[in-house]
Image (cartoon, rainbow, N blue to C red; front, side, top):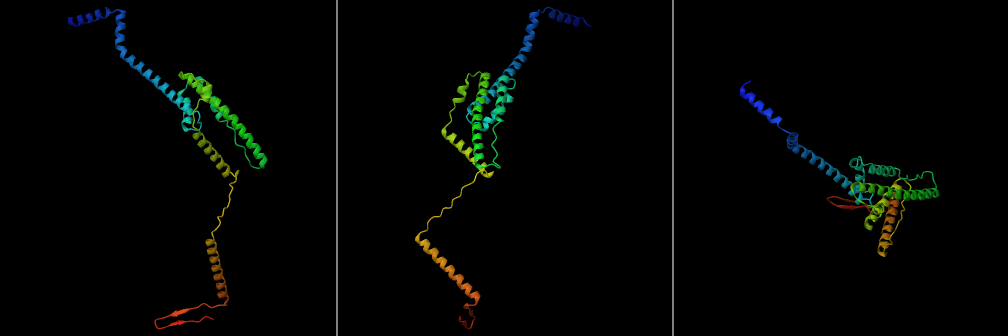
Length: 251
């Protein structure tokens, strides 16, 4: 090793041995600060995006809470397991609501039943559906209440259930569509009959006269054809050539 190399190594050793702990920490902070800042920014962005997705699900369900059959509402419900994973209060409320949804009352069968039994079954089904619908609203309110608390919203359950604006026209359209759908199912399954009524409009005097004349002509034609086939009358035949015309007389 040369003298110059030995001197350089000794200077480097003297340089590092002269560092204090605070100097070393300062150097590490300068070197690691950009990396730490990038990682922290990524973490915060990921957290913001997760909360934004949760907010989108919550807003969708709040906006459509009066329309349980809206495709957006159904999609929002199915996103809860994905976006609110780890939030026990929300997932428990969703499980209770889902269990209630899949246990909807079944429409009674009508096979082999008389009219009185059918009416009794229909009345019982309507009562069960009314009870089930009220419970569904309560479960949905519990779910939205838990989601709102998780996101920092302070809604009470009564506000969630009652503070819904829905134009009467929308309700009428939905009720009519539901009625038509049920009626069509009843008709196709033979539970409902379709009434048919024949309506004839009175004919005018001219139309009646024309119809009578037509009927008289048709009757005459039938009578003549019958007489011809029986040999009672003969048909006129005209034979025409280039020289003369001969007409066979009728009998």
